[in-house]
Image 1: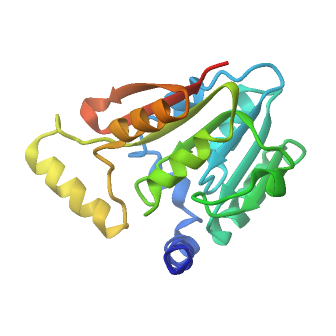
Image 2 (image 1 turned 90 degrees about the horizontal axis):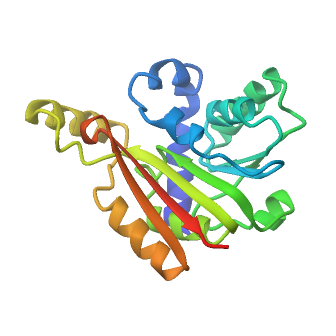
Length: 218
């Protein structure tokens, strides 16, 4: 419980001011988000959940690409949720977006959203900031509808980048409490195998970004 409280406090402290210019700055290095969202391809009138929805930027994009999908988002930072609520309303999505405060590692979607399963769940650049990231992936996979899929995009191992660039980037990420999960693909594969799912791995931009997908069988 203490770790959860500390993480919540940290996220509010980090984003209290950053949330106002977060989207402007992050577009230059949170690579792979748009290809990941474009690959969601939910069924007609399907449901989409973003874990760690932040400013709502990704939900707004998903809402534009999939106009018939219902959209849900949760975050542990009240500061970010306030911004997400404002931005999704400005985008005209208030009637399609449901936002909730919750810990991604331990949440009850029935209590939050009135449903237990989702056709698509995605996590964008959040597992690298969540201490219990493996629990988050396992929890998310457990709430996939039959034929549903979990999509994760985050920093990769950076191994194909020049050594100096890789070292400098790791140090810069450390300042922002970000830890790339070099075993993301292995963990996703193990979780998929243990939940009767299949996993896929995709490397982008010389290892800068990774996309991991866990698909639940029908």
